[in-house]
Length: 382
Length: 165
Ligand SMILES: [Zn+2]
Image (cartoon, rainbow over all chains, first blue to last red; front, side, top):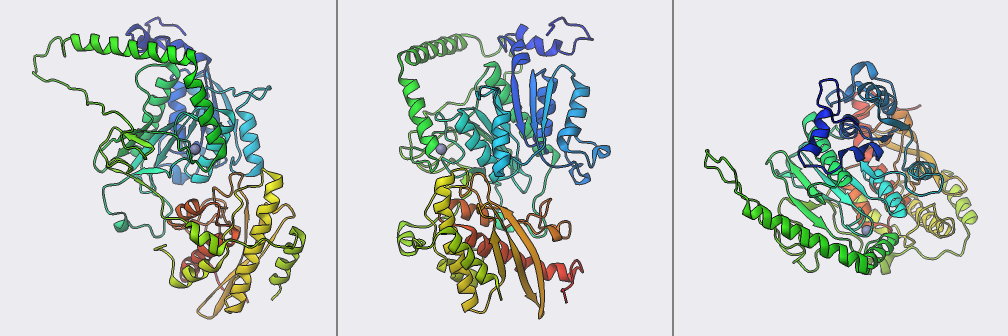
């Protein structure tokens, strides 16, 4: 990757990040592999951003075809209607930047076979992960839970993204197995739209979409991915976006020790053991010292060298996270202990109580599966 | 369960809850779960027959991973019948099965590509919250039945379907 500043060098503006001291070693991106799962309104734009950034290898997943109904979003073109999204994306992206190695996977990851194929595609011949990051740009809970399970099994970091069905809000979330909440740890948090949900007309449509919201979420997602991959800035664990109120809540979501996914519990134990190791403690202490030194240096520096406008920008005061006690959420946004921060809500109703379960659990049947299947078949006759 | 009618709410209360938290990737425990699925379904169909509101037939492959059958809905005294099918997803029962009615693909907006029915915004959150206690019978009762009740009249009105003789 040349850092020569000439009009013919496609990477000169990116390598300038290094010269400016924002990124320590930008060229590392050439050795990195990212999987983008779901090539819809968010994933396709994220893939284009990564391609233009000079990513080493990009794995793309989608089983759908390009439709004219997708044309309100960015990236795909009308003449690509009918092509698989992965083929159409590969065609466009190879044209934009031939340096990126592209791999396309055109299957549904939520089925039994699809799950195994997806997991295998993320691994090298020894079964170890060959990707640096997985970006979830899918539009349904089943696919997110599939990515969650595969990444828990592989110990693979991933980032989740979502746009609400009413197209006016979205979020991104970093998931590191054992270190942060997994996708099954807490009910999905959605950004409250700021308007009464019941007044929204939902009849007759499954979902609305806007190129703006999707483009913004793709930008937030890839920005966070770049920070994570190239180790610069602060990688936000959860960032919400409400377009109606221009509200961006952020927070950390700690893993839930009672997570329904038992593998998540195991990863939490492993992460705690890693954190307690002498090497990790030394590294954490060094990092804290470095952060303190950086903060001190910043405090000494003038707010702005040439502040002729009289404007002062003051950083938000970061509150200590996790003072809530029972809550898994250490919010930087305001909120009651145990409750999600203002502007965020759980998207879950109440479930079966222990009492209901005792009263009404299925009785253990004496019959075996074959007997039960023939009983079922008998019921099928009128 | 704000979104379901009182009949549905009464019925779903009588379907047994399942207890085995296991999907088809774990062959051994899946056999236990499958027994629960079949027992709950048999109970649900018996309830329907007893109240003269039988509305579907269903059968599974021997592994219990692919299910198919016929469902029907009576609208203005005419019976509309459709073939449906679904697969048990890899992350089941954390996630619900996606029920497809391929013959209606493209005929209604309340359907995803490939003929998967578009469920109410309330169904999937309720399923997740009740996992692993909801099973195939609950998906039929809270998912497919209300969908037919909402969509069949609309499909008839728009002329997208006509009753089969
Ligand atoms: Zn978890």
